[in-house]
Length: 136
Image (tube, rainbow, N blue to C red; front, side):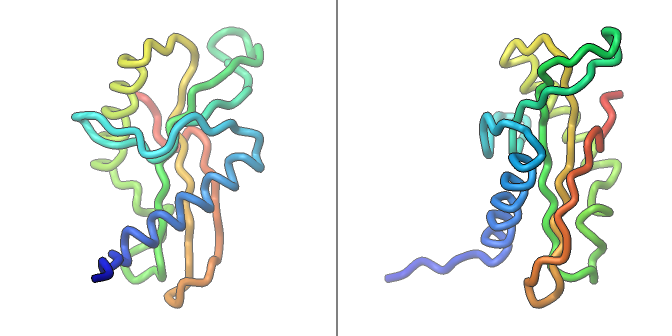
């Protein structure tokens, strides 16, 4: 007997695959996908070479925690608009847990990749938003 496929899970997986391609095309290196802990899940963990302005603007290796938001249609808002204050708080919590558990000592940030599709599932946009969620 064939298992039924959850359409939301399928959409999410397709969005993550598109996000990985966009991140790699932007020069980031993917380190992990779907990292889980007791606090929550990180969709993508990546590394990026970028200026660290806290330390004089020298180029450093950044740890990048990436949340992928995929939406079909905009009846419930766009992918970009789906990062609510509550979701941002959760992302900060999981990101801090990852940083602490891995012993990362360099700069890090939380990015969002917003994947927007029309209501028929045709891709409209993939937007990589760097520093989308500030660490408060």
